[in-house]
Image: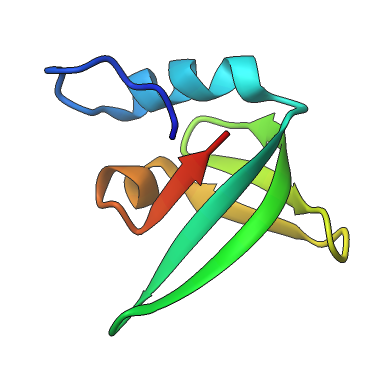
Amino acid sequence: MLVIPAKTICTKDIIKKALIPHIGQIVKIKYNLGRNKFETYEAKIIKIYNCVFLVELIENHSIKSFSYADIITKTIKIYE
């Protein structure tokens, strides 16, 4: 899972710093759709911006964007 220091308040800056070493690496993203429905993607982190980050899906090379709030609210989980 994405490494975030324990016992810290999760902010977008902390998440952004945790994502920077993983640029260009392939990660697994588990996306919570609600009502016990999940989608799992294998993707490569390609760009990091102030409020969002972009990933390229391995299976069909499409690009998806996620916000840091998605990680804070646990809508998505990122695994190495």
